[in-house]
Amino acid sequence: MTEFIRKRAKNAKNDILSGLTVALALVPEAVAFAFVAGVDPLVGLYAAFMIGLITSIFGGRPGMISGATGALAVVMVSLVAEGNAMGAVGEQLGLYYLFATVILMGIIQMLAGVFKLGKFVRLIPHPVMMGFVNGLAIVIFLSQLGMFMTSENGQETWLQGPKLWTMIGLVALTMGIMFGLPKLTKKLPEALIAILVVSAIVIFGNLDVATVGSFIREGGGEGLKGGLPMFQTDIFNKVPLTWATFKFIAPYALILAAIGLIESLMTLNLIDELTETRGNSNRECLAQGGANIVTGLFGGMGGCAMIGQSIINIKGGGRGRLSGIVAALALLGFILFASGLIEQVPIAALVGVMFMVVIGTFAWSSFRIMNKIPKTDLFVLILVSGLTVLFDLAIAVIAGVIVSALVFAWENARRIRARKRLKEDGTKVYEIWGPLFFGSITAFNDKFDAKNDPDKVEIDFVESRVSDHSALEAISNLVEKYKAEGKDIKLKHLSEDCKALLYKSNPKYRGIIVEAIDDPRYHLAANPEDFPKPLSEYKL
Image 1 (cartoon, rainbow, N blue to C red):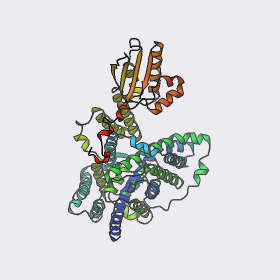
Image 2: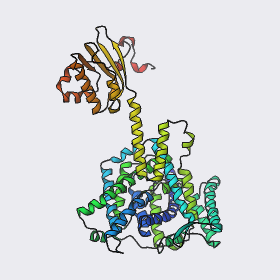
Image 3: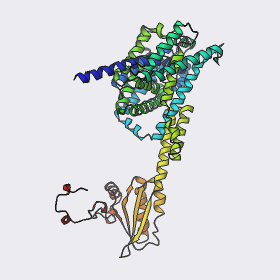
Image 4: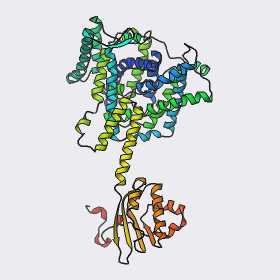
């Protein structure tokens, strides 16, 4: 019992320290995504707090961090813009349409959990998963390059001269601390220590560099400080509950729900692999949906799992729900009480942390296995990586799954075989090998010669599997073809479900399908008399 408590206490320490690190990294991300979506920074921060807290408590993957994400923010841009155009200037009607959309998005996600659709994430092939993490690593890297730019006269320009070298030096120092500290001791959270050290250098050295505070003000915000999230009663006053409203927000809600669930469940799978544990995908769907409903009602922009912050948490030792809870509550604490301190954290320190996340996220093994995996898998890996960078995660994953499925169907379609032999009585036997489904129908039909075959024909499916309606239709057409030639045809070793469907389609199959037959795969090649002792006593 003492050992159990000691281990739990040790893990609690890791969860708390890792949660604090994640909270620091959440601030600029949430603010940046709010700017992308065209809403106030507090809308992004409230979303990060509420979604992070709810999914940490009720989600299906302890240790996973959720909040406002860029994948969702880019979809929200046109939603907010179109909503604003429907109202008067300065009314910010688009913001309230966003809240309503996020609520509907949450309802859709909860329905996915209720109907247990989360299990379909298991159908995502490994090359798609590798392409996803590689593409996401590139997206995270490219998003951080914007931090090396400054705004002058309303235009974005790259940092130059001493400012650029100072930025690069602080980023390199952060990465160096995170790389070297674990080699000295693993008791200290390297990301948090790196942020504190670099922040101290900037504050006490009075260095002129971009900070969280300057980043917020540069984007048009007034600062980090805010109050507790408030229930948005204006949603129901400003957004009419009409069919026209539903038609406007439903497509956005569906897209956001799909992107949110795909990113969350893919991140869940990745964390499962990193921690060698198993999360609950359906429970995560319910938690994500519930969190988005709440955040929409209380003025947040919605969100989903964040792969970068989740990996920061896992690498920092966060394994339990406490890490996500601490991150969310610390973020709220920053908003309420410590805004002045957090605004002094240099952006360079957070960029360094995210660069280390990029290095840890990218599947470097994909370069090593390029010549060892099928070319089709390599194509899928590169395709998903590219689409993730060019478009978004949902399009990339869906395209990857479709291509993988088509490749699988094509490969299996080529595996149908028919071994032919003649019995002593002149009956011709076709022994079918391989799966019979829509893709292999043409090859299956080419095996038979109804016109020139003898009067008696048997088709044996002992090594085949009839998989779909197309296969049943092909068998039915083949039977009709032989019957039209006036020949006797028998079907053997069909599966029970296949026989039931054929009997249901036409009673004539009761005279065509051979029922009273043994399966040769289950015969013992010896007589019982050869085994005087019980079989369990023999070493097989």
